[in-house]
Image 1 (cartoon, helix red, strand yellow):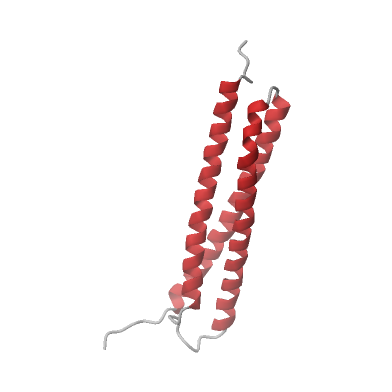
Image 2 (image 1 turned 180 degrees about the vertical axis):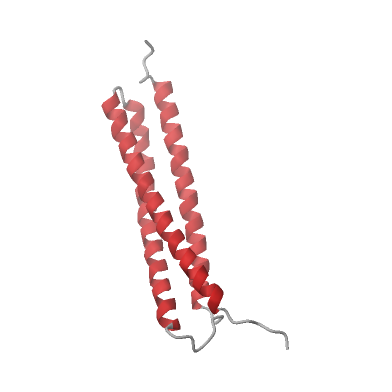
Length: 140
C-alpha cells in the first residue's frame, strides 16, 4: 500500500487548499469593490427627496454595509493566518494531523460563505430599495 502521507501527496493537498484560499480572497476583494459602490450610491443625492424614512433607511444600509466590510476584513485576516500555517501540513504523517488542517479549512470556508451570503442579502435589499427611489431624470 502506498504511503499517502509522502511529501508529494502532502504538497498536492496543500496546493488544493491554497487555491481555495485564493478564491476566497478574490471573492472578498470583489465584495469590497461592491461595498464601496453601495456606500457611494447611498451617500449620493440621487434619491427622490421627501421619501418617508429615506434618511433612516439609507443610514441603516450604510451601517450594515460597514458591518459587512468589517466582517470581511476579519475573515480576510483569518484566511491570511490560515495560509501561513498551511505549510505545516507538509509535515503531517497521519490522518489526525491532516484532519485538523481540513477541519480548520472547512470552518474558514463556512465563515467566508456566511460573510458572502450576508452581503448578498444586503446588496439585494439596497438595489431593490434604490431601484424604486432613484430620481427619474427627464430631458427638458
